[in-house]
Length: 268
Image (cartoon, rainbow, N blue to C red; front, side):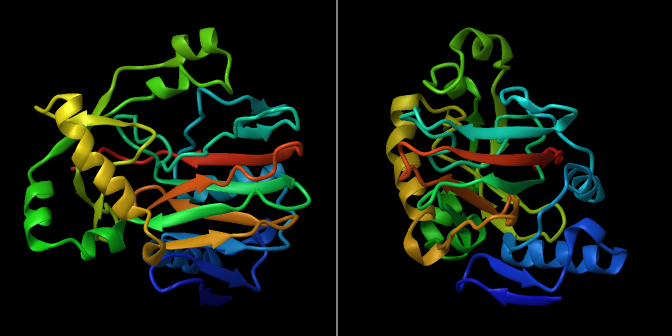
């Protein structure tokens, strides 16, 4: 297994491993790379649905997404589909998958199925590097805060059926703004533009300026990497360590990705 870092703070490409026939030792190395780099990329995999599910189960229990359509015959796999006629793209804002749940998602595994001729890249930003580079004053402020996360943005989305989304939306969840990664202990900033609504004990209006600053700060180029998809490619990211954004630059073309998400644990 060859591991090549993509940027200084975020991402790594992994070569010479077949996810359809993954050994226990290779999985251990894969997981270590994920916790080190936040997101890992593997090309030319042609991952079968069965291997996709099996890989996710090595990380933990699968979290079936309540908003996406499941792949026929494989309820664990969500279709992340953009039709050529759509003007809005799923995931076009910075976010961390399932941060609105009481136990936010551990990792997501995304496999390319149908790609546009150009565009459709995914950006990732390191929430750990963002924490590491905070000023002492802002770090002290954030350490004492908690923030509310809500899936309510799905109900107002122009992508999904609004009636169905309103039934699926659940109560908001409260998480610390600074959390320790459960496996490594690394501290990260855990707020994101799609799902964080306000700080606990603050109004939305009071929260908005600081949250807006944090969103810009976390997603600055120095903390980012960009993945250009190719047929058969797979990306695995830790939702506690990185945020991601789907680049909406392929209007008029279709794109289909298959995603499996692994359950995490409450963040303290």
